[in-house]
Image 1 (spheres, rainbow over the protein chains, first blue to last red):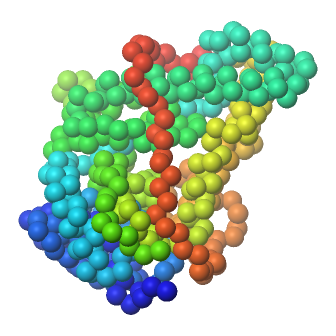
Image 2: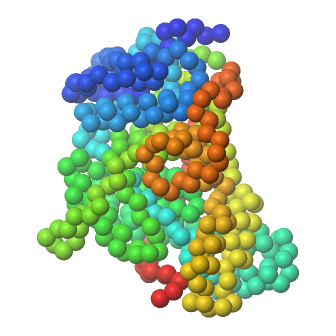
Length: 250
Length: 167
């Protein structure tokens, strides 16, 4: 059994030279504190429980949002708890010193904005049937005979068509907006999403980007509903799997 | 929100990201410290993992087949009235299982008071805000590499023709 008395919940890493972040409370309403090593500062708070609740998700987000107003932060994935402050230094900061510093450097002054698109399923399916006659025929056959194998084939084919449209529509959005952003990355989508693209944009470059989003929205018209969300810390660009040095605990 | 510009275009302002918007990112992204304990988050973690598995299963194919089958294309497009459309959209048929799972998580997280954005139809009356969680099990940082799918490399030009069903 591991001793959790000194356990800390980890929110993220900022540059040591970053502006001072005013006090904020984290999970279990514990005050967030700074742990420093070299050029890095990890933000942590003490934690007693080993089981997180919905309120903790809110607290995690509240802290990130708060810090993000003042400094560039590399968020650590929700639910990361380390045995002690010493562990945070020895296993998070020290072994990844260069990598984290470099990431922070890269992200400096940048924010993440997501452009999400969603199909209306019914219109999408109609579009597919209209554009792919073979599918319309297969559909009729399913209607006549109702064989399971035909149904699966039909569904599979429909999914491929959806996949193709996603790829095309994603390319359109990237083509329109990549030039206005420092980087772009496809975030996870699930039907009926058309795309969910994360863009890294300079804090002061959001006007030009927003204009681009407006053009994208107009371009898609009713076909795809656009949602433009942000800013957030650069979650999608801080996905690195870090080296924890030796084994932590089993 | 949109602001007009001199060039005749307009500038979109992003919707401030409430927790509802970033929930998936929050649970799924960020730095992962290899091997490190991620505190057991029984309800939520299971649901998100579950949501991933459902995708690309036969289930999905059948669902698409069914959805396509429901489309009433014998009569031509304009014959389908608005009421019909609304009905088929609200009958739940258009909603995937995975979405259901995510909605479930949202429900758990937000209950009734939070900054949600209208599109969650919290239906079930059960609202577990308190300690309804099994304890003990502890999961280590499992990182189901979230395949972000779309390659988007194809050079094919696509026009974004609006294809509303009626006009």
